[in-house]
Image 1 (tube, rainbow, N blue to C red):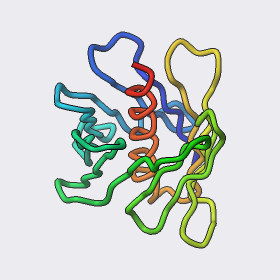
Image 2: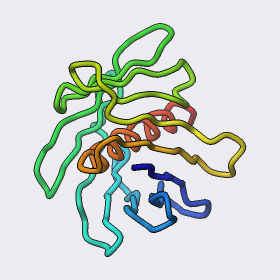
Image 3: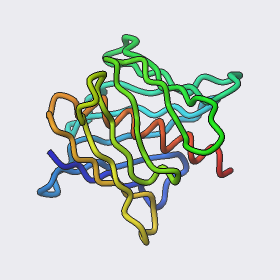
Length: 157
């Protein structure tokens, strides 16, 4: 299952539309005013599925994932000198990618690919293609991509 993840061009807060291969809206992520990033994820009908919230006052960036109002796990950036690395407290997943963080894989504890994420260059807004191997992993994968993108956004400001 391929998802196209596009940041909205004119928005006061981080907002994203996520489409399937045929151009149908699968998810919408909307940022809200909060201390740190807060992104709520909705299905195509506007029903809230979950949200990610940045924890503030931490030494390195940390984002908590909530599904249906319940804690599902966290994504935390780890200290490294060259290659960015993220600790994921969900199903033993981890991220393996290049130093620019534009192309990376999300792997399970056995090293099998859950999803591959690639950034499309030369676009007006952040645009990613997310190739998810199992549709049931799409929401969690999207939450990880949102957290990594939010962390990069915070670092560049």
